[in-house]
Structure formats: C-alpha cells, structure tokens
Length: 213
Image (cartoon, rainbow, N blue to C red; front, side, top):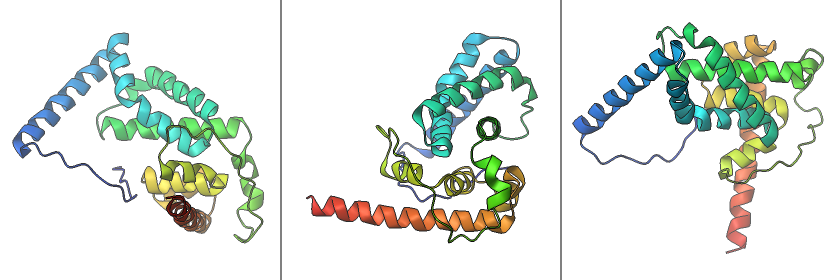
C-alpha cells in the first residue's frame, strides 16, 4: 500500500533538468535493488549501504512514536536486526522504503507491547471521553530536532502514536484501529486532538519567538 506524507512541509525544488533527474533516480533505484539482492545472499557490505541510506528515516520514525532518545536508538537498531533476518520477505510488490517503514512500525508497536506502556491500558481507556485529564508529558532530549518534531514529542502518548501513523506514515484510521486494537472513532479523535495541540503549541512557540526578537 502506498504511503502518503500528509504533513505540509517546505520542499526544496531541484533545478536540474527533468531528464537528468529521472536518470539519476533510475540509477539510484538500480543501485538499491542491487544492494537488496546482495543482502539477501548474505552480503553485509550491501546491507550496510541500506542501513546508511535509511537509518536516519527509521530513527526519526522511532523517535516520533516513542519520544525518547535512548528508546528510539535501541528500537532503531532492532529494526535493522529484524530487517537482516527478514529481508528475504521483500518481494518488490511495493517500494522498499514503504516495506521497511511497515517493518519498523511493527517493531515499534512490539516494543510498546513488550514494555507494557500505552497499549496495555488501551482497552480500559479507549471508550472514555476525550475530555479526560491529559496525561503528563515528560520532557525529552530534543537536540537536533526541528520545531514540529519537538512539538510531536510533547503530545500525550496515544495522540502521538496515532498522529505519527496517520499523518507521517500514511496509514488509514481503519488500519490504525486494527493495529492498535481500538475503535476507528477513537483513532480519529486522537488524531484531531493531536492536531489541535500541535497547532496551539506551534502558535505559542511562534509568538514567544516574536517576543524575543
């Protein structure tokens, strides 16, 4: 399933001619396919190339879902251990990056289940009103993260995970509900809650920055 990034972000437009850009993209795709094929045959060098290409993306996904630097680093490494073990399962039916993000998402959710965090409590809280008292949000090491990522890390855990899965990873609410064993309506309400909080915090941060100028 194709994953779509729904967040509005500023994009840098490559001014190279379209043909040159397309040719470069084809070369990159061919090189990646070579690495995948070689990694399936046990090449650690080829696998390292895949790691170098994708580890920052996967770390960002882990950090956004876990909002904890140490946990994100550990789970990111676990993702690539799982990738090494399961790379033969990639059949090319989708883009490799899409498949890898799906693997990473499952590893993160497995980590949450294993450590008995939010997913353990979901059956007792998913039917409660969204007006219930907001969870306490700990501060985290956010050095090197952009403004939006810093605000995502502040979100309550339920809202943060749903927001990342829907807005960043492109899962539908029906898929999120199935993955997290919650009602579709709960997924939607947590997403809208996250959006409202992010909008509020970003406006406040902008105003604070303006006051200090």
